[in-house]
Length: 158
Image (cartoon, rainbow, N blue to C red; front, side):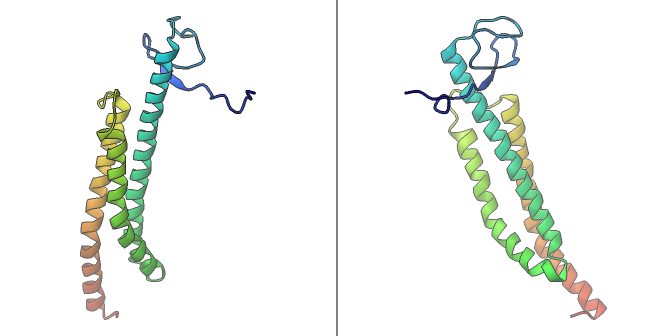
């Protein structure tokens, strides 16, 4: 007994001929009328889902890197500084794990998908930029703490 819930929803992929996004339920492209091979369409839709996943995960990594910068700034404020410091310290260990997971899923184990595809290149670039933000944040944190300590000492604030 088959139900609507057990059927998979159509997935999207780029037409082989014109490059427009169409879904797997189509027998031919609505843009260029090229015939669509269902097996190829299924593979292309899975590849597109993987690429989209890589891009979404890269966006989350960039958000995590920006969050580290916010936590770094928040450590300067008296009431939230301790909690921010604890969260920043824990993110120093968690962030490289996120990057390794991304590279493991979307670079090192990709089979049959061009790693130089535009969205994969952009997501890889985003992950690398997030890594740079991470390195700057962990280098800046002790420097900022030392500067704040010196300024507080000069102002007589304990």
